[in-house]
Amino acid sequence: MRIAMIAAMAHDRVIGKDNQMPWHLPEDLRHFKQMTLGKPVVMGRKTFESIGRPLPGRHNIVISRQSDYAPEGVTRVSSFKEAVEAAGNCEELVVIGGGQLYREILPQADTLYLTEIDLQVEGDTRFPEWDDGSWQQIYEESGHSVNGLDFRFINMVRKC
Image (cartoon, rainbow, N blue to C red):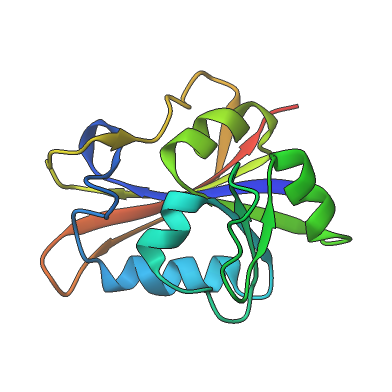
């Protein structure tokens, strides 16, 4: 099973502020859906609560240390190891956030699906520093959003 991570980030790797994304980028939402539909998605409790509901068409796995945390429509686990087990036999599991989970899982990740947004914004959560030479870019697509923001999708795979 491949372990992938997907994230959208502004300048300085900002991915969130007050448990929300500080932008609205419809093209990235479509990209996120395309890259995660039909796959197990793993997220932390705060990320799940910021979304507010299970993502349709995906096996939603939420990591929480709260043993009584049991939202409807999700599988609650207490560790990433349990999340991998809960995902079962699949080609790719996708980690969708948040910041703490990204930092924990980055060393194990095989693939990064990143959206880089040309936006300077304040944030309290950042994607971990990933560009250490151990990744190879395999895809790039640039675009201009309907809301005026420039962005690019990049896919990275870990070098052997």
